[in-house]
Amino acid sequence: MKKSLPIAALTALATTALATTAATAVPGTVSGDGGNRIAVIRGDGSALVKEGPLSAPWTVEGDSVKQIVVAGDRIGILKGDGSALVKEGGLGAQWTLEGDNVVQLALSGSRIGILKASGDAYVKEGTLGAQWTLEGDNVKQLQLSGDRIGIVKANGDTYVKEGALYDPWTLEGDNVKQLALSGSRIGILKANGDAYVKEGALGAQWTVEANGVTELALS
Image 1 (tube, rainbow, N blue to C red):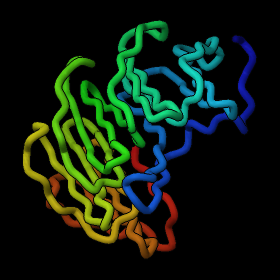
Image 2 (image 1 turned 60 degrees about the vertical axis):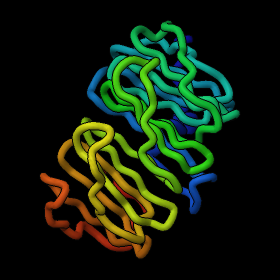
Image 3 (image 1 turned 180 degrees about the vertical axis):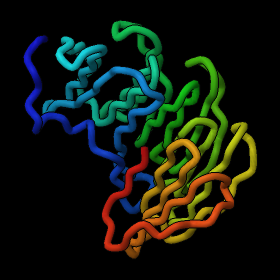
Image 4 (image 1 turned 45 degrees about the horizontal axis):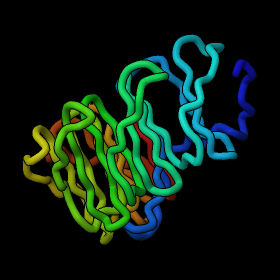
């Protein structure tokens, strides 16, 4: 496949959009950890990835896909039936099934995170077949960045941890509708439209960045 995709088809490059409950969370696409891959989802649900120059050919990675995530040499897809699959290595590598009844998939480094329709959030670290750690329940959004994990609970309470999968949580805010993590920065978008960002330790002070906001992104 050597033809360029139309701009209207690049639906996979949108950032996370959130619904009001964990069971109906709408997954977004996150690209991280550098690299030279581009991923898209076409209007027919087919997922494609290219690697290298912008003019490189596309590789079809799946059909009936509603979320695609690229991070380093890993690719993850979330299918319309709720099955989450991840591959590691080349674009033609084999898929590993990571979970079912999934509504959001997250990748960062050697970590994989899934948010189940039940609201349970799990993260694993290491190989694709590593064991899962339950990180929270009643979750509506899950974020990974480096050694940080962030969750937004159904009631809007937002927590971030740093370090090991089992380390304690730090409460970062309430009435939050979107969380963003990138490196040493944390961003939250409050239900009233106020956007805050902090840098450094989990307990650092917030800076108000804007109000009347509908979406927040960090890089």
